[in-house]
Length: 115
Image (tube, rainbow, N blue to C red; front, side, top):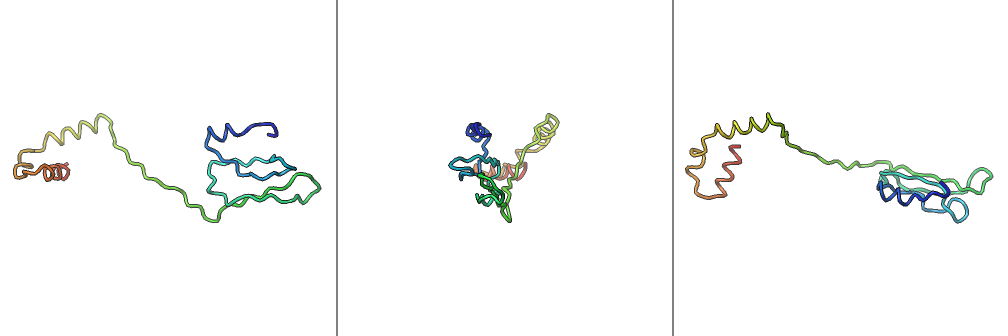
């Protein structure tokens, strides 16, 4: 990893390198790559407890992480569902439904209620 340029990987895969402080002299040799940076509170570089010129890296996990939740909705567009919808629409008496309505907005609302 010492001579490897991770910048292109970070950009292509939307990853984040959390270690931004030099860990050996003026160079950052440690790599901590993640695709969920909001899970991590931060990193700290401290002098090693053993005899080494390489500093120690400590990462802190957040106490609580709120996951981003999204709801996904989809319509079942298989042929048998389309045919069932067509049968329902054909069975409706549309003249009776819209006979008393003269406003287009009211007609649209009545259509949605019926469907």
